[in-house]
Length: 442
Image (cartoon, rainbow, N blue to C red; front, side):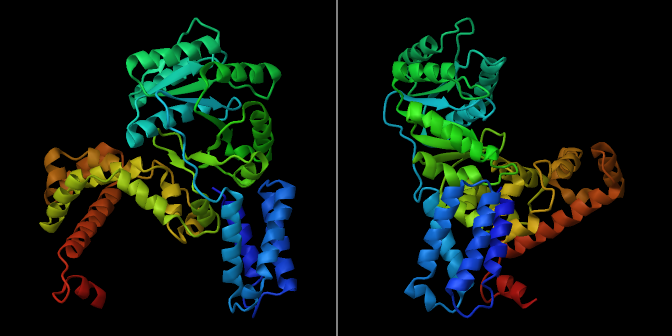
C-alpha cells in the first residue's frame, strides 16, 4: 500500500541531498514536489496545501537551520506532520456496555459485511468478547447468507430473520436476543447502496435511534480515494459516527482517503483491513502508518503479529528439538502455518525497514508456500519425521506426487538442511566457545 506515494516522497527528499542547510529556496522546491505527490495520491487539495505550509513553517525554524543533514530533518518533520494529519494517537473502540452495540455503516461494496466478521473475530479472540453478528442488509442478494457463512467460519452466532424486511425490527430483536443468550457484543451489519440516497440515510438513522449503539463505524474502501472522503462527510452529517474503517489496504491504495478523511470529518481512523482472511484486521496507528509511508517499515506491528501466533509451550519444545538436531518437516510445516496466519506475506515483508522498496516489483502472494507444502505433503510420515532417509528414489516419488520437478525437491531438501544446521548452531552458541563467536569469525 502507498507504494507510489512513498516513491514520490522519497524523490522529493532527494532534492535536499548534499545541501549544507535548509533554506527557503530548497524547502520551496522540495515542498512543491511533496504537494504534487499528495495530490497524485488523491489527497484533498486544501489539505495538501495546508500540510505543506505547516511543514514549511517548521522547516524554516531556527533549530532546523542549524541542522547539518537537511534531508533527514525534512523526513522527520514530514513524518511528524503525517502522524498528526492521520490523527496523532491510536483511537480505541468503545466496549463499555452489556451488550455493547456496534453499528456498521457504509456504501455497498466497501467491505462492510466482511469487516463485520473480522471485527467479531478480533474482539472475540483478543478482548474475550462473546459477539453476535446481525444481518440487517435485507436488500442485497445473498448478504444474509454471506454473513452466516462468515459467522460459521469464525465460530460466531449470526442473528437473522430472512423473511423480515424491516431492519429496525431485526436490530431491536437481535439486541434482545443477545441479552437473553448472555452475549455481550452485538455487531449490526446494515444495508449499503451504490450511492448515498435519502432512503438509505433515513433507514440507518432509524436503526441508530432504535438500538442506541455504543459505537458507529463508517466502513470505506481505501481504493476509492477522494470519493470516499466525500461519502464519509455525508454519512457523518447524518449519523455522527465514532470512527472510520479503511478496507482493502492490501490493494493498490494511493493513500488519499487515509490522509484526508481525519481532517474532513474530524473522526479517527480506528481499524484497517488488509486482506480477505478473518485475521486480516489491524488497529490503526497513525505513527506506524507514517513510518510505512516513508519507507521506515513497521517492526512493532510485525512483532505484535508474531506474538499473536506465539505459543510459549510449543516454542520450548521446538527449541529442544532444534538443539538436538531433531527439527523435521512436521515442525517446518507448523512454522509456515503460523506465518500464513499473520496475514498477507508481501505486507508482512514490507514492515521490515528498507524491505518495502526492495520487494515493490516482486510478485509475492499468499500462495508463496504452495509448492513447498505440496512437496512436504507428498512425503510419508516417516520421511517428514526423518528427512535423512529421503534417497534418490524417494525424491522421484515425492516430485511425481507433488506435481513438481526433482530439482525443486532437491532444492527444498538442501535449503531445509542448511536451515536446520544454522538453527542448531545458533541455539547451541555460547560466548567464548565457538557458537555465535565462531559464526562471526567466518
